[in-house]
Image 1 (spheres, rainbow, N blue to C red):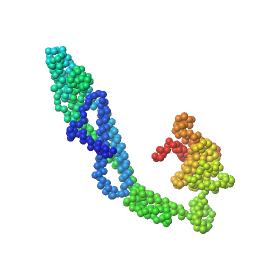
Image 2: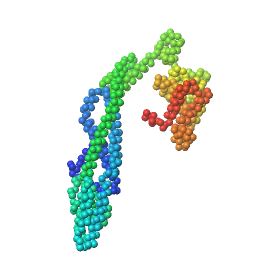
Image 3: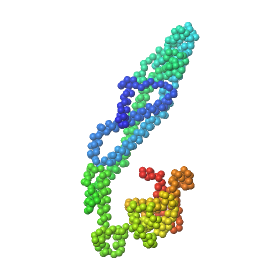
Image 4: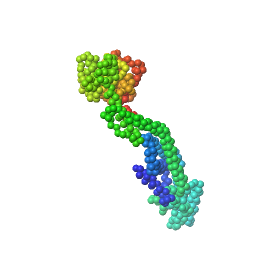
Length: 575
């Protein structure tokens, strides 16, 4: 399309009649043709050509300044990313501004529709007047056989010339008004047409033809096949119009240049300069991190030599994160003690190291023995009275709650909330275990026995949220209240679901849709059910929270559950 635009721009020369002779075709002054459409079409063509000209200018700039760009690239490689971002933003904003300017150029002339000169109805009126006068002259000769000529038509032509003497356009030729006529088998004269023979305009598009609507006297040049025609010379108005169009070209291009330059400077100030400083900082940090040496890092990372002046920032960041991950892994693996050192400590110190700092203990045999991972097996005395033993590793994605036995569901949920590494990071448990068990049982009872949106699905989602929070080390960046609220929200996110969709509820005018004004009726219902159950005696999982903490937990639960509406999916992905 770019090369087609170049070809279209070059083709503009074929419309310059001063170089290649007559151009265009005569205009027909017909009131059935709306002049507004003609004006809009003409300006739209001008706008399209302006767009082609800009593309050609960009192409020339690419060729002429390519060497300068290459030198600039070699001069400062640290600005590569910032320059690319600046170019993309400038291109996007410039395109929008260009479209806005062209749109204004198209719309503005619509306010001057009534000033379009070819809509002058006086030309049509004079055509009717001349046809009527010609008929009157013919009838006079018919009724006066002794008279061989009449000056009636010539006087009408003179009056028309005088009428247009004060404007820039004027008639220059008449066709179909023969001076020699045959009346009752004898020859007569109706002079006038020969007095209006002037030079025809060079450009055909400066000619306006006006054909009479009806031949009052059937004759040569005015019959069923053709009509008498008046020819007008619009050379001066067309020159003025061409000048205005050229000025509009210059104005549009000037405005585009000014606005584009202003936006480019703004982007450079607000985006490019800060980004350049950030990129420079990235390179400095990369130079420090990548030069660090840690014993054992060759086992988990293989970093090639890097050159901060040639490699791009994305590759450097990738290497930095790889190196940091390796260092963290080595540090964690070295967070251990031998059994001999542990035996020399008292029970309190050993508890702090093992239970709180998660220090691993190397046995005398030299084999590393990690701290046992808490699983539901360890909770048998707490939640099962000692009569339920099973081995389920909840710190993996392989848990299948859809096939798990019912009696194992509650121990799994209680483990996540009270004994998982995620929740043990909290200073204190947000709820008593007995209260949570009552709450859990009420929640499970509130789920319906349907194929998908059931209690097993809810526990499965809760486990997924637990895994994501654990893997992302949520205790460093998510507060205790929000962590607990997210787990509760996951457990209750489909509470009371009947297996119907929001669109179905809205279209069927279900009571939930009416209650919540068609705005995520299912999700609003789930939230309401959650807090209704939490109000019950012995099941208030938020009862130990302060007023501020309760508001925060409620806000988190509501936001998390409402965002399970699929209607928000693409918006969240976009964000």
